[in-house]
Length: 385
Ligand SMILES: *Cc1c(COP(=O)(O)O)cnc(C)c1O
Figure 1 (spheres, protein in one colour):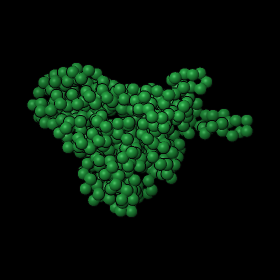
Figure 2 (cartoon, helix red, strand yellow):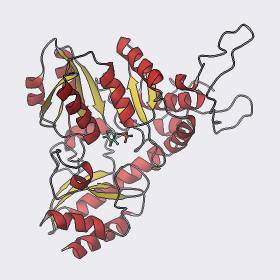
Figure 3 (tube, protein in one colour):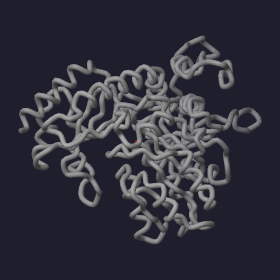
Figure 4 (cartoon, rainbow, N blue to C red):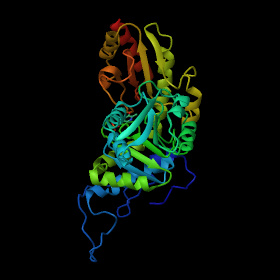
């Protein structure tokens, strides 16, 4: 395979060709799936390549990692069996009692893990209001804070954090910054370029884009002792992404640019249509020029704001639930970033203990015709009130 890492080609071209993949032996332009759980040693009894056993990873997974590293501008990417297994590997790599600063509103699974580790004393976690960099700075303990976890835009409010400014705050206290930019994937948002030390993505979402894989990606600009530890945790926990899922992920990523452009365009049309709607209290979408984080998001994502937005309905919590229930086109399902549009009453799905507006509906805009999606929500709002 020619190395396209430094070739002057646009990310759309590199993604469409999965780095101009050609299988050496056959000329196949799609990769093979390498599912072996074990590897025969060579005549000298040494491993033929770096593989001994399935938990080491495999060629198919490494191709998916190479594609993500390319669009992230990363020196190294590791793929895990889910976003959560990647997140947990980072937390496990922290020393006992390490101080972590994170947002009070972020993906519920990661927040749950942080609270659990705080409760047992495994980690000491301070939460600050999402997007408030002064509060983040105040939560830092110089020389003690090991990790700052930023999710931008955050789930499910889509509050934007300036990654470069957050990196400065983290670094001046001697901490590392990890970013979760799952809602605006690379190459739109390249967190490592903006100063993040570790870039996290749930590849289940936009990167794969077809709701048929769970996967988590971690990427770094510079490998470190902590990076080696994370790789070791993946190997010893057996959380490497399976080769079948890696193959689906490579196939999905070939259309990432088409999908994200379409989803971003439809989301802005959708958000503008429903702005000021009498049955809605607000529309939360960083692509709207009136959103407080719009300018930072525009800078950080190159103007592709993604397909995630939330609506706060007027009336009771039940009206919000009924709106999701009456949709005919939007699937009433959790997750995001797939080709099909989804709607969920976030409070029902995240459960008790999370700071979610009771009337919040989270929408993942797919690649369907935007006018069909608008008509569907319109009739659902009418049916619910
Ligand atoms: C889905 C998601 C995760 C967790 O990833 P899984 O692949 O579901 O384990 C983490 N962060 C964000 C923002 C997500 O949307």
